[in-house]
Image 1 (cartoon, rainbow, N blue to C red):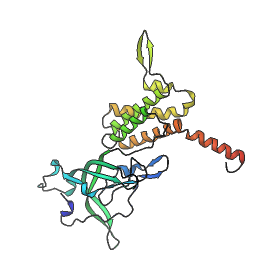
Image 2 (cartoon, one colour):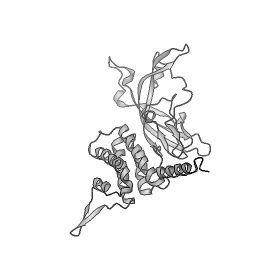
Image 3 (cartoon, one colour):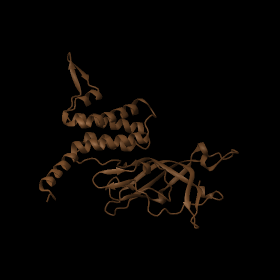
Image 4 (cartoon, helix red, strand yellow):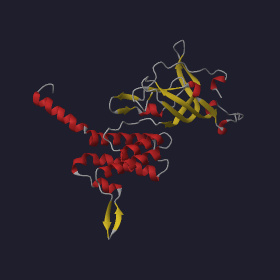
Length: 282
């Protein structure tokens, strides 16, 4: 069903410069979570950064965009029926705008009808009903954070898995991030078990975090925060929100950068050189 078929409803005007979900994309991603959470209209899609090249943005191929009203909302005979009762399922393909990449990404999700505000030809703001859509799955998934090149596969694979889950199930994504932390501790040679009377006794994640050497002391509280969010995702279904997972991503990105890219250490070394020369390092 096309909502613009209803009397008095008009399509949204072009948005001009579409919104970017990334505020800055150099080596590491700075995500605007508000744009990732916000439903989109076909006239005003966000600029999802291509997960392959991290340079181009994904543009929806309108010829592949399909949406159907779901059974739960097809009966419009109720006296109190309003367009915002409508619920959709949708699927489509999107292509990267970078000519050297042109990656193709499939996405699907849900939709509904809601009010949108736009400026009419007289410069006045008007409210109209419009179809809004919320992606639940991207394949390949969007990169919510960038991973250092030095990050071990055992860690990065779990993080990428969380990218696949984050829109559809924040709780499952939080649990995958927790597993990534467990793998990280293993990569850092933190033991997983003790042998007692010839039997293995596995050490809890909390205890393993406490076993981190002193050089990681400033990261312990941040790692522990991921552990608590992951626990909630595992044991309290529906208690984790998208924002909670975004917090976990920010924690994890900081941890991985500090451990594998040694950002602070490199910055301190550069600052020391500048201070020593009392001017530019070169």
